[in-house]
Image 1 (cartoon, rainbow, N blue to C red):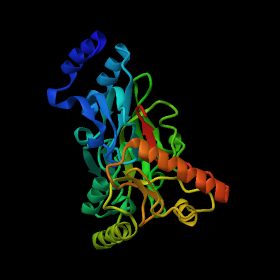
Image 2: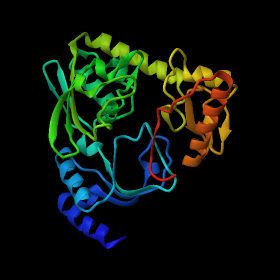
Image 3: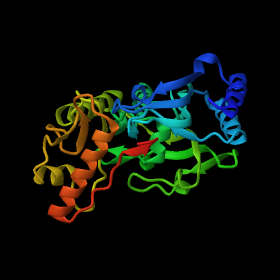
Image 4: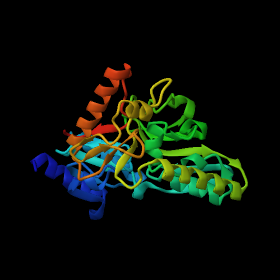
Length: 305
């Protein structure tokens, strides 16, 4: 470790507790794909500590990556240099005021849906089974079964590139299919507010159970994955194209196109990030050659491959 990194760590220890800082932390422990090499420095701040950590990284010129639950992330086998800042369990407060729920960026979306159920508020039933955090869901305008974040989101609190706290309406995020302007503008999502509608608790519960059952029936939940691997191409479905290309069960190393749902790439047998990347590339090539459709990955890459 360089002198600069040592000085940085010394200052970081003044901001965070010892248990909030992990060195050479395997990223395979922090992604749903269960792959990825070590992060030099892995930190788990509370929301009110994020600004100080980012300021220190800037002062010491330490590169930084922001992550949530790692449910839509592929980390390279060589790991990540610099700092990985997880907005997770230490930044997961959820509060209710009337028909509005406010959640910190690290709250799991399913936990927010559960809180809505407890309060007999409808609007987040489809989100119940999404494993990502609120922050990650805002960044990619996550959705399922016809629902997207933009349908319930009213306001987001972000930290700007200049480390200023700013409130934005959902309209100001330019939310579209699996996209927002959060990363384009260098924002870090701190918390989000949802506007919901009073409903019948039993009906809300029944809808959530229905969506959970659909996921269980159709998705390969018994293997590590990052959910749907590809975005939905206009006028088509990625899984159907991959199936029609004869790629069901296609395997590279320990990575496989799911036999249960061809839209998922799964870590079947101790796959590496390289295995997964190679499989994704070959699937893209074969689908393009057969159908002229370019599949765009929904999974985000991070670190050194």
